[in-house]
Amino acid sequence: MKIIAGNSNRPLAEAVAAYLNLPLSKASIRRFADMEVFVEIHENMRGEDVFVFQSTSYPANDNLMELLVIIDAVRRASARRITAVIPYFGYARQDRKPGPRTPISAKLVANIITEAGADRVLTLDLHAGQIQGFFDIPTDNLYAAPIMAKDIKERYRNDNLMFVSPDVGGVIRTRAVARRLNADLAIVDKRRERAGVSEVMHIIGDVEGRRCILIDDIVDSAGTLCNAANALKEHGAESVMAYVTHGVLSGGAVARVASSALETLVTTDTIVATEAMRVSENIRRLTTAPLMAEAMRRISDESSVSSLWD
Image (cartoon, rainbow, N blue to C red; front, side, top):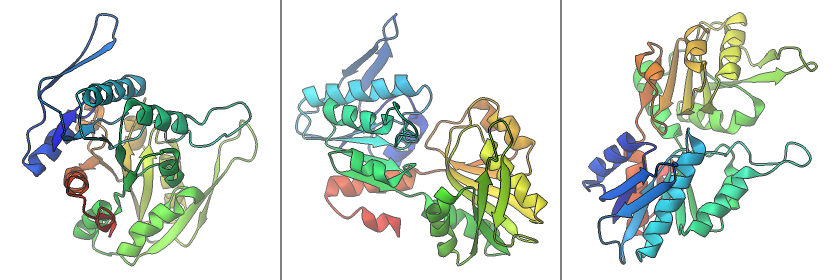
């Protein structure tokens, strides 16, 4: 079993390697003067079970290309099997045609990864479950719900909690966490009355006097999350927190979170934290290293991965 880490999330890759008591394989991954990716592996890969560890987060195109070139290098080095470990799968929000003459970019990326030489994919909390079907190779989609539920239980027990989905599409994800703590569920129904008019938030469920926890998979600009938090406070919520798997937090998102009704935003470490995130007083991070490492161990041992979802 060998682990090769790209440059997108070295801290998480190192934590996973430490959990497995394995060193990261020696490789040079650098850029030419014109920013072309160059990869050279300094260890024997012949007949090995190789895990290529790389999130396709910002800069998404550079990190995706780096993943593809590493996979190609490993394939040409005669590895027995190559697993692309992608904690955050970029382009996942482009999983359908929202209008005419638009691409399904998630399917395109899946095709490219397969053609590069990956034999299977391991990822975490895909934006849409059907993306697993975009791959023509085995794909394991882990869930962050157990990590979130454990942290919530340790910090808040079940003290008047209400779990809230920030939109109708996230109900299944939110229910998975709420069920683990035997807590109630509410939904934010987001509507735009007409173009150019701000969204109107309707709360499905009685949140008055409750400690609300928003659950989502991706926070990017944080606009929807902050609007939902403000709407919950307006409807009488005692406090509002949020647990999100992938903390993209682009642009002025960190400042937006700081000035919103959110007391705390908790993300995982699938994406490297920016300096603004590290110094923020109301953003906290959970590690996914034990979950990712255990899944990788089980894939290598040919044992069950699905039991990690329980």
